[in-house]
Image (cartoon, rainbow, N blue to C red):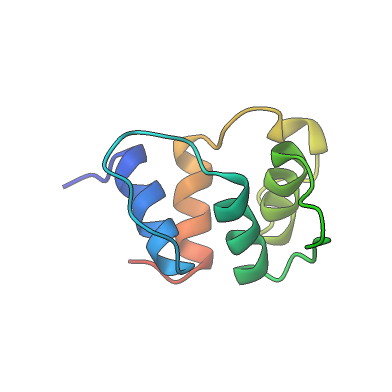
Length: 90
């Protein structure tokens, strides 16, 4: 069975120690910060950067994108699949 975007987001949340969400929602800043930590993208933790900056850093660390403009929007399904693969989620 194919995983939905919501399934992928929840699997990623759980893999980085965050809580599964019942409703469909994009990642919070805190969840993105946890993903950044899991993929070894260093961020300033005293003040979390913008979501777009964290998304760009995550995609850069896993080798999906090198263009910071690609992260102005929430992750697409293929990007979520790449993040799940990078985190070892099957």
